[in-house]
Image (tube, helix red, strand yellow):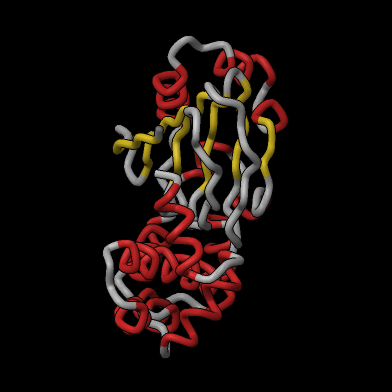
Length: 228
């Protein structure tokens, strides 16, 4: 069972999950976000992924509570660049003082505790990077955004690495994948998905899905549908 809602913090999603009998693990797609996750009394940070992750089967009854930080908002809360967490899962007590991490781990209301701590540590994100995420989701090219924002390629790369854990071109690929999967889940033919999501053609879509997800789009959708 998975549920999510908008957090009281901007660009942040609060989510919870509990493993039930018959649940099968599904690939977690990269999304340009990082998460702080409470997992049955253990708290860790899941950094921004560059490819889909295939988690192992968790025991029935495992509970997860988490905040997902989008649009480059996570680094300010954690106090370090996202690039230091790319493709990593790190125990929170390696990043924050152990007593602070322990209080979160021992909380009887993990999601409320996570939101309270995140609010207390909140720092306004890089506005240009929030705008970059919004522009890329809308289909704007990285080059067009850089020109509009007056940012050199070097500055855009550096700020994107700090905010998202990777450069703007990788962010573009990942958010385009998210858009394609959403369209495909809605039942659109793959040729239409490719065109509407901004791929050159269906073959380009197929190559990108295999590179970022590890399986064909049809296989991913079939497995995800069977797991819901």
